[in-house]
Length: 399
Image (cartoon, helix red, strand yellow):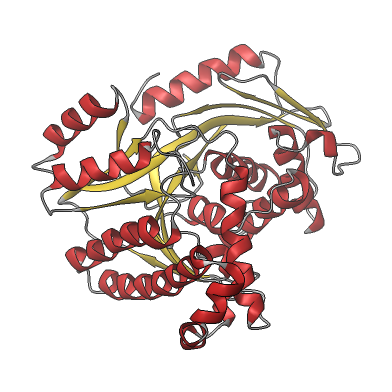
């Protein structure tokens, strides 16, 4: 696939013409929606906590144009085409976990806000890595929303509202009770501090930090996400047991000192792992605040110390690096151990996203990056290490 933006636009324009050769209703528009990384705040968002996240330079790029039909026809390269009839948009349970559900849900989100969405054709290409924790699904949702905003809303719908529409699509039409972090990162862009105390109106700050001395890598551990639902679900379940003991729904509502005083009773009632996971959440929120302060003063080294501490806490207390009871296969743990050896105390590394399988996020000094990639790929596999950069802009129309 072509790499430069001009080559990619020419490529997607050509593919659009092949997929939709008939005349359309207006000019062809090009829209880009980024992927994202979670920099700090591992599993804090579903506890109404704090996170630092960022859009990255990998994106979904697509050409879009109105059509004369009352339907959306969308092709994503490498996948079956999607066709959505706009008559009577509603939830279809048999479409759960499908791209059709996401498109339908985004359309309905705009309709609920009083916008009339018409038919359009679209062709997308993507270099957002599936299963990498870069939020390919959120990038897709936000792309669809940005296309509708451009074609039918005059671009007047703000990025935060775009993110809420996409979360609605994922929760209601797609059948996944996700938070808002991924969609906000893709819609707003840049490095974001987000406070989810009020999930309907999260507090957002955008930072322009100077990471010019570092490359950001995502390392695919080779672990398989399949059959890990129980592992993921156990985290909010156990945290809910701890908060419920104090009559609260979320740990954000619980006082840390009260938890520390109640450790004997909490261990007896819910087990040690639940207590350790709760302590991770409290400390992780504090780390995010410290990192936010460092970002505001452009103290990159102090910021990276919090990133590294976050990774250690996920390993030791949240315990979402290795699958419970698994002895032979611990791919994320191996990658983390290699990063510690290869970085020589510089930079930072941590688990990326939900955990148990997937990827590790690494900040590598530029003088080490070539050797680092060579050594990691020799140990883990060719092509496992992907170099990214921070993207300042969220989903946008490319003029």
